[in-house]
Each structure stands twice: as C-alpha cells, then as structure tokens.
Length: 573
Image (cartoon, rainbow, N blue to C red; front, side, top):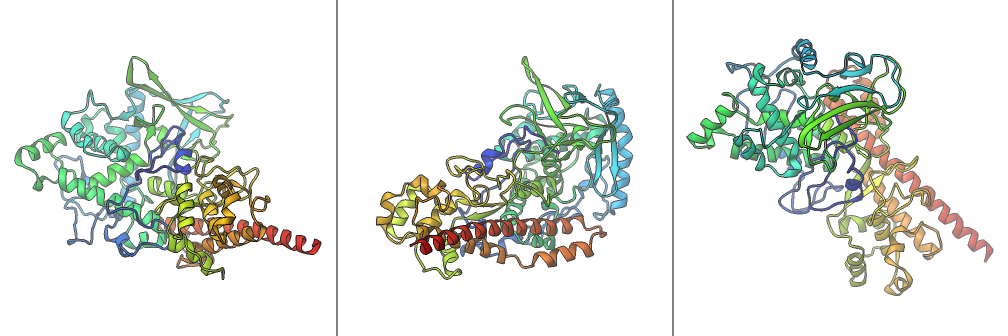
C-alpha cells in the first residue's frame, strides 16, 4: 500500500500538471517511454507506425505466474516463483488454486506477528489484523484513539529498503543497471534477495507473509484481461513494463547468457536460486503495491511491514510519518498516526497519493475506484485526430499546419505527442490536472477547469479563429485560461470551440467497444465469480467512460450557456 509521501514521476522526459500534483504521493508511478519515439497514447489507439497488436505482443503475467511474449517465439519460465527461496529448489506445478495460495498466506501470519514482536514493533495495543473474504487483510483500530495518537511504530531495523553501505556489491551493481524511475524493480531485487535467504533473512517472516498471488496488477493479466481494459495508454504501459523486465532478465540474470564466473556469483548471491522473469515480475509488483517514500522528495523507498496492510482512501483517517536520524540517513523509524478520532473496530485508511488516477491505482496496486475524483482520460496531441473533432460535429475543416496557427502552437508550447487530459471535474476534483503553466485554471472561476485541459481549449479556440487578424488582439494566456463566454473572444467562435471539444470527447467515448450498460450488466452477472482481474478490467473501463460522459455533459452545459447568450444578444439587437 502507499501513503502521502510517495512520489509520482513521468519517465518520458516531460512533466505535466498531473505529475506535479502527485509529488506528495507515496510511490513513483513507473511510466516507461517507448524507445521508438512519441506515439499515440490516447485514442485512436495507435499511430500508423505501430500496429494495434503491439499492445499485446508483450503480454503480462497471468495469474498462473507465466510471462510470455509473442515475438520471436514463446518464452516460458521453467520454475514458478512460488517455489523461489525454498531449499532445495523443486519443480512444482505452475497452476495453484486460490485455496492453496490462501493456506500459504494464513500459515505465515503467526510467525509474522511473532517477528513483529521480536523486532519491537509497537502495535498490539493499537491495531489488529482482519481478513476479508474478497480483499485480503486489513488493519482496524483495536481501541478508541484520538487525533494525533500513534497506533503503530516501526523501529529503524524493520523497514526493508536499499542501503549501498550494507547491500552486497553484486546486488548494488545489478541495481545500478536499472533506470532510477524503475525503483520498484530495484527494491524488488532486494526483496528477492531476502526471499532467497529463507529463514536466515532478518526479514524472512515478513517476506514469507507477502502474498503469493498479487491479483489485479496488470502485468499478471492474461491477454484477454488486457484487451478487456479497452484503454491503450494503460495497455501500452503493461507492454513496456513487461518488455523491460524481459530484456533486463535476459541480459543480466539469465545464467545461460552469462559467463561461468558471473553465473556462479549470481547463484551465490541468491543462495542457489535463479532469478527468472516470473520472480522479478513478482518482486516488482510486490514493491509497487506496498512501498513507501520515507524521505522528502521521494528519493528513498521502503517496505513497511504491517503498515502496508492499510487500505487506500482519498479521505484517510491515518497517515504514515517517517522520522530520520540526522546522524544516519538509513536509520528511519516510521509511525502510523491518526488524522482524526477513530473508534474501536474502524478500518484504518491512508492515502496512497494526493491525485492518483485509476491508471495509477490499477498499474501499481491492482484495483480501481469507481468514484475516484481524480480519474482522467489521456489524449495524445495529434493534429489529425484533433482536426477530426471538427469534422464529426459538422464544423468547417481547418488545419493546425497553417503557418500562423503553427506559430501560435509553438508560442503555446503545445507539441505533437503531448498528453492532454480530460478530467472528471466538479467537487474540487482536479481530473489529474494541477494549476500550473500548462493548466493554469481555477475551478472556482471556470467550470471547465477540472474537465478540459487548458491546452485543448487553446487548440480548439485556435481552430475556431478564421484568420490571423483575429489573433492580433488575443494573448496566448487568454487562449489557455479565459473562461468561455467572458467577452475576450467573439461569442460565435466560443460556441464553435466548445462544439469542437464536445466532438473530441464524443470520439474518445465512441472508441470503447462496449457501452456502459453492457459493462454494468456483465459485472452484475459475474459479481460472484473468482476472476478478480477480469472484473477489475471491466470496472476500469466503466470508470473511464463515466469520466468522458461526465466531461461531455459539462461541456454541453457550457455550450448551452453560450448559445443562450448568443440568442439573448440577437433578440436585444
């Protein structure tokens, strides 16, 4: 799980309002860049340079713990990660029922609690662990507690984190080969090292308690479950994450591809166990779904035993508070503290991040929030697609490539491949956007501030303008931030721009292969089935459709106001 000090960062060299808005989040969202250069990351699903099948050519990990790729033949792990760290290593069936999996987890609970006691973790008087049939373990208050009270305290030797001073040199070498934004893979290797040690690991009972199956995390999805998302931006991230893991394992961990000396060193490091693609995928998923940032700026992450059982809420009743000993940056103690009064039996919630979209929740934690106020839909800025929004609404065709419009785009710093955002809006929701140089909008003054990216409204206004002379009295800032109908633009142009935006949102909504009603009926019919990942995928796409439908309604409402104003002026004339 995660808390308020996680860091979210893009890895494509750009920043946007949404990324900046997550600087106080717990985890760094590992968004990977396609090495082939900018591509469509919104609808339509892909550019002409990459077929739609790209998204599925590097499949995720299925719940039977198999990575596979469909390029250059099928790759299959020889051993499941379920047996990783056992001595001797044994071949076991890769299929394991959820019942067998549950028994393993339940069997590890007692030694885990004993380990917490031995490590001096203060929790017995504050919290207790409850197991839910569908959602696993959670923390609840064992007694009434007041705001500011500490319910859990972890001594400095309990958090599991990287430490160059103490980690084996070979582990440090392997970690330094991983890009900094993929810190989940870095810390995942450390978790695998502790798992390989078994009972001799200082964190052995905790690592053994980690779930054998991390349901809902998309790199464990089957091909059908990935397709069920119907949302290319996340499908692309799954493909790129899986591609990185496969490449990294092949080049650095596959003993068959290494020299004898290196292979021997790796076997010694991991106590005779081989780190295959399944093991590394599990390690990354375990870390991303649980790690916390324990220093300002998010430059140090740690696994926090027990505290990581807290579930997420955008209205949490607790917070995670790390404290660092000034003499040693690695001497970090962590507390779980009440943000408000809690009663005995209340579930304890923390916030995984300030403005996490469902993309973030799904990719890193394996769940979605159907009422997420910060959810949004990503749209890659593509001239043809933007211009298509005018065509479908019956507006005259115009080109952004005309020299004076192209010059305005450069002045606005809006470039091909930029990610534009359609948000939920309303009730203070940011739609994943923050008020900054690219989205300098104030929702209190502008109903579309949390709905339509400032750059999208600027582009729509630019295409609504008939000639460069109209631009002479318009500032670039007004194109971005002026509320529709505030008198700075010709009223007919404003109505046209809003109609254009509505057309773009309608196209995005039409790209889904199923209707909301169909999806909701499917969810109702399959609510008691065990396929959590498929249900999560369907819930994810339903949430995206609600974002777009809500945005379309708000845009249409604003357009109606403009039309009413035009009619009022016409009647007064």
